[in-house]
Length: 489
Image (cartoon, rainbow, N blue to C red; front, side, top):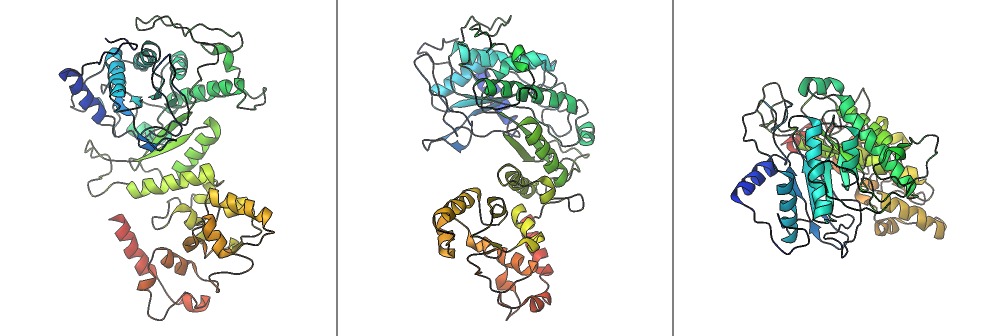
């Protein structure tokens, strides 16, 4: 093994490359991989750095496109989840890294400038604790033997001891625990070896310790009566300024001194993932669970992965004629509304209408279903109201409220275009100074047809200037049905 301070290069043997091919291919169905959300500058004591945003098919603060080594520690698994390519009953080639192999491989790829970080997941071999301990050893080698300062995203193994989750959290930038399926019924049907309690327990542990760490650094103002006193259980006590490293009996652990407060607990937060289309769960159920996770566990992201029936299991939906990619896309758009646009799940969908519109994005669908709220007057509408207008984003809404303070509310449509408002979408839902680009109140069907670019298919002589009564005689259902078929294809 090469020392982290030496100039030697780890030689990737044929056996290691074989493992790499198997375990990177096995990791491709895990989509919970995104920018780091942290900034850390390397120094003379180590190698690597991370710039926010900064990893895995994203762009860094200085404009670079950078990526992670996305790999499993092992594809061996004691579980038999029906949707998983690595399930116990599958006849696939099995292999595992050792902690030394994976750490050396990561550093070798970093030195060759192939990667700038690591995304590490794993099957569960022997037991959750055994697997979590091996993952922890990999991170320990990278951080202390190689002094690697780069970004590391690691999966917390459901069912592992709190102590292992805690120790790993002090070495990782981001951790994630995959929910996989939104309801207990679906989980019991497709992944009977897993349960909600084992998934939510590490989530709560990560969120509690992260809040304690953020409070210590003055980043989180929390009522002390409502915050769990998790700091008493931290491996590095902030209260007594301990400088001792995390204790570890493993042969991979080497003595290392860590100054109090210099390392942060999961600084980039935690995330999770849902598989979309493997079960009968509706979009409404998925969005409701996502909303609850954001509120209760302070998640950074919920990822949605369109189901692909890689096992050709007869008990699972057939995806040979197309996957749920459009549905996945709509769920990401709805998720964006939850996180940035102040929407609630019950505003986007309901038990009566549990599926997202395939024709238009969730924000447009909301506006079309609430035409009684529109048009809104740009010069007086609140920030909350502006966020509900299609074509107005978070940035443009902030710009509008800022400009209004200095222009006495005098805004024109040309000004809105310069600000960044997409008038092609917003024109049906706004007025500016009492004026509208669409002089007559029009129907939901007409707006939808125009948004979908179907106006060339309208009957001859029918234009947007016509009245509500005239438009009510026109039925665009056939055009809309054809458009749905086109989108589905």
